[in-house]
Every structure is written in C-alpha cells, then in structure tokens.
Length: 419
Figure 1 (cartoon, rainbow, N blue to C red):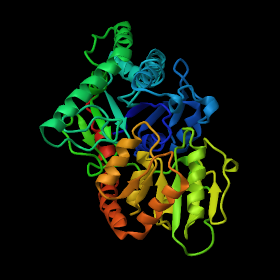
Figure 2 (figure 1 turned 180 degrees about the horizontal axis):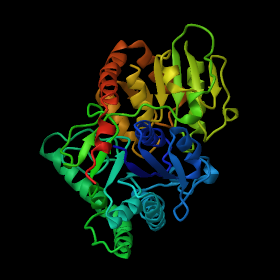
Figure 3 (figure 1 turned 60 degrees about the vertical axis):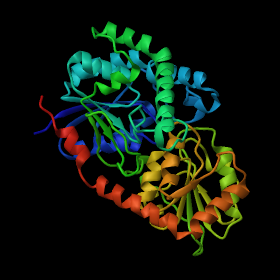
Figure 4 (figure 1 turned 180 degrees about the vertical axis):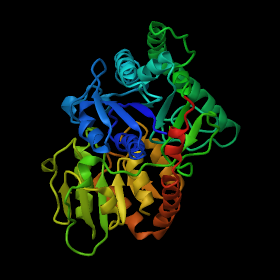
C-alpha cells in the first residue's frame, strides 16, 4: 500500500545524503514523498524523485558557502556562546517558520508520516499539532543524554566506575540546563501557539517522535540505554548527487592512495586542507583531495603527488584507496569503514570529536588536532598506512556497517504505519 510522506529537512551538509537516501528509498517503493528543504538541497532532492518544496517562512540558504551561512559556528568560542548560537540558528530560532511551513504543506499533501531532521523542532511541533505522527532522523551517533552514553561534544570515552558515572551525571545535567536556558522558553511559546502543552526539557520534544531512527550501526556507537522508540537502522551509504557522476583521476603510480575529504559545508577548513596536502606531499603516497561545494580547488596548492578536485564519488575512490583523512563527519567515516579503510581524523567541531573517539577506541584510526602541523599529520598517515591492525579494525566495523546498510530496517520502520 502506498503512503504519503513529508520530509522536513535542514541542510546540515553531511546529513543531507543519508536523509535524502531515506526519501529516495521510499520513492523507489512507490510512495509519494514531498521534501521541504533549503534551496541549497534542491538539485539533490530532485535527483531522488521526490517533490521539492522550499522553506518559505523558515531559514533557507541558497548555497553551502560561507556567504550563505548565518550560523558561523567555527568562529564561536565557549559553551555559553555555542549554546546560544545553536538555539538561535538551529534549534528554536527557526522553529516558528518551520511550524508555519510544515502546517501549510501538510494540509496540502496530507502525509501519513512527517520525517524531520534532528534539529527541526518547529516541524515536530507542527506535526504534533496536526495529529500526524513524526519520525526523527539521526544520521550519526546518538547525541542526546542517555544512561551509559558519555556526554556529547568533548570526545569522551564511556564512564568507568563510580567517578565516571558521576562525571556523566554532572556533565549531562549541566548541558541540559544550558540548552534549556536558551531554548525551552521559546520552544514552549511555539508549542503554546499551536495549542500544545509545555515540555519540561528541550529534548522531550524530540523524544515525542514515533521513532528516533539512527542511521548508523550500533557497533560504531557506544552502548547505552536508549529510549524505547530509538532504533539503529543502519547507515545510508549514498554519495551526494553532486558527486555521483564526477570524472576523477588519481596521480599516476602504484603508491598507496589517500583520500582526503573534509566537510561539505564551510567550517573554515582551507588552512587545514592545505596542511594535509603538504603532509601527503612529503610521503610516498598518492593523494586525492576533494574540497566539496564549500571551497574551490584553486584555494589549495597541490604537491606533485596530490590531485585536488571539487568532488569525486567517494564510493568509487574508496575501492582504490588505502586510507581516508577526514574531519570526522559520520557519513565519511562510515563509508570509509564500509570500504575497509582506516581513518586519520582532524575533528573540527559539532559531533566530530565524539565520532573521533569512537574511531580510536576501536583501533580503526588515529586522531590529531585540526591545527596540527603538516609533520604531525604526515606521521599519523604513515602510522596508519604501515600498520595493518588499523585496516583490520576498520574492516570489522565495515562488516557491521555493510550488513546494517543492506538490512532494509530503515524502510521497514518508515513503512510501519497504522494511520
């Protein structure tokens, strides 16, 4: 039986391919899918076969470059400023506009299910007010407080013993209070406007979902007691539409190929990319650097053994590569492991330090500071390329990722409707 779905998505860069991968799979199953999204995502939405509807009242960027980015998180320092910035630009600032757009679109397309990005709180409110069940997509690890899960944002390992558990309790409590300080009053004001009762904490809005769908493998995340509506449904390994048909070539030779892939959105990463390219230039390897849509290849100086391109289909490149150097985005890491490749991670922010610690805890790569000099990056690359234990650990994670990606659990959960 065909259903109608409304996806309400924000452009998080690396979150877009897996979220739109979910939409594409539903289209291929014969369902009617409409995607509310930002103009920067429009060509990728169209490529899935879904109908595209732009955000009108909600924020809507035209591209992924710095000029089109209101939330310049790479410039923010300190937890108070970060919490305020997340509240204003990601969580509650856009909520009123999102609620208006989702309400209007839902009344037009009459969806059986609304599917939202993790930060689209206004879309969740609108669905709840309209009496439509909603699912939340989490194309990464579980990022909310949960018993046994280390606090997010600092790259911590799971707690060990009573002191560790006390650490988690205090840090999770502090982070929840900080987010609530900047989000909760405005969130409840929007809920009141739509005739809904207030929530006690910000994350309660997310937990009201029918399903929290984690687009990753449970083996990659740390073990924890998650809410009963949370499901690990496996990663979506789709390349972004803007990279699928790109023609690429690596430098000639038979030295190990190293793929460099930092963020597809602007995170002030040009200097870091240059140091990585310089590091590869000092090693007996071949390098392929993909800048993504946020930077131009002309921004970098390429050594003779390094090719710099705007984009390349990572799935094809990884079949020939020996290693991936990345900022620690979940999508790049899970694709690398699915190809059996270890990683060198230079995490920049957001959830990337937490992804990095999951890599190092499993022995599937090493992490260095994003400000590390080229000599340090070169040592890390040499270490991972020359020690087969890293590739073996990556393949173990990759076997789980490939199994879960092929399980069909994502579509099964999205199709499990009672309306």
